[in-house]
Length: 176
Image (cartoon, rainbow, N blue to C red; front, side):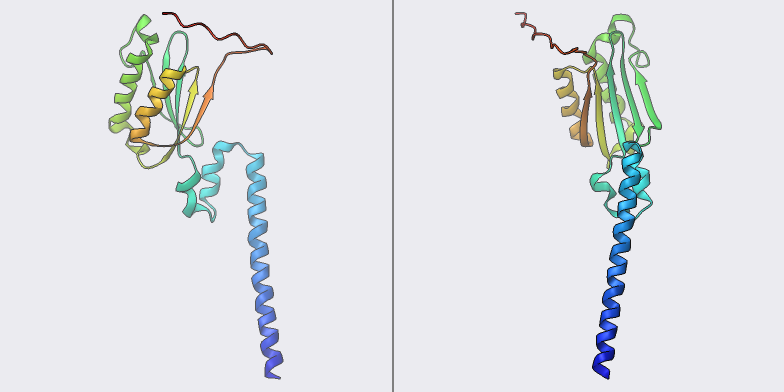
């Protein structure tokens, strides 16, 4: 009689463990389906309320640093993962006027000074994504090199506005 009771109790405990495991699987499936339907920037706040909170430093992006080079201006934006703007700066705000706003090196050095000041202390120990819009190769490498020393860069995305319309232009010859 005792052996049959033990056997039943072990079977019941095994079934209960299976039920818990299946419930966790269903929860994770629901989370993944919701993430599939939602925009990727809301990932941080969606997962921070669930059981994945303890792993969030490893794979979630907390802030986005966005560099935009237009024909007439140079812009820096810092936002959190949901898109709320934390810091915005353009070449005009750092005392550059006219043609100076297009001189990328000058604008970038001033942006780096702003990022090293106390205004950007919230970026220190958080994973950061870099987004570039119309940034050429040499400036991109300069930005990554400088920011890699101070911040933990998780991803880098490039958004170029050159339309190829099916035919890509030939590479320009270097002028000597």
